[in-house]
Image 1 (cartoon, rainbow, N blue to C red):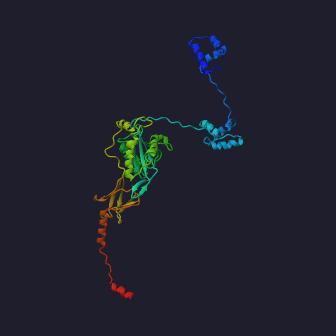
Image 2: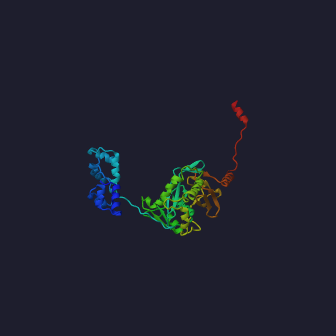
Image 3: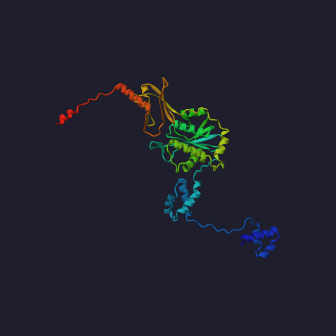
Length: 399
């Protein structure tokens, strides 16, 4: 048999130097047919041994039948079922074969790579940190982060919230858009309760929010996280890069560190897919995005309350004091992410203005309200009359 070196030498002598087949056969001692076969062969010769048989060959038909009935059947169960038929092989030989043939029995899903135009979409999702967030007064609370990511630049932003109720979700969207600095054409969400009604329709509050901003909305199909893979990958990066090894004083410190992490780490790194920094592409994307309105949509909670005789209002398990002078009158209550404000409807007087507390089960009383309440009680009741007895009476009783 001609080896590779001899095959190359024969072809060089014949095709380059013009040596005839007869001369090559005389020089090398090979037959003319062997020389002709070497010259005609387009590939170098190689030795191939016939593949040996496998212990699994007699059982492949049964394995195919099992996979046809249940394509997700694990290899351990398949080995248990073919063992009574005489199979004596090990785990590796079965697992290797299943890795090759299982795709033929599974309906494989393919994905199309999507390219986004600048300013086209912004994907949103709600991420839950692993640890509870400190909220002051020695307490912690489960928190959430509304995460946004632009499709073209991959620039991201986040907003801390403490519930998945509609006003908090809308506040998170508003703050993320403020951080990004412009408005995309479409807000993409999964079927998040509070924003999605039924059948791909938005809730009234979310539709009004998008209408005020003049943006479109889109809800992904159920159980389809790949449809918003841009923000999903950003959340995975947050879990690995932002949360580990950090300490927070309160919710404001958490938001501050989150904003700094987006500015200095997430948006300033070279993105693996884009081969560019999101902050650089964001400048290009903002040029074609709509500007933020002068006044963002109102996401505060509002309701009307009649001041009770016990002048407090309760919100999110906390009690906030009201002006006792307004007892019996109706006030307009407004709760934002920073403060609790109540104003009398008839006169416009401030009934209360408290910093909002995210620590649960607290009673917040303004000093002026406590003084007013004490004065009113003194005027109604006056000083109580207390009987003062002579100590001589107790001496007589003892004696």
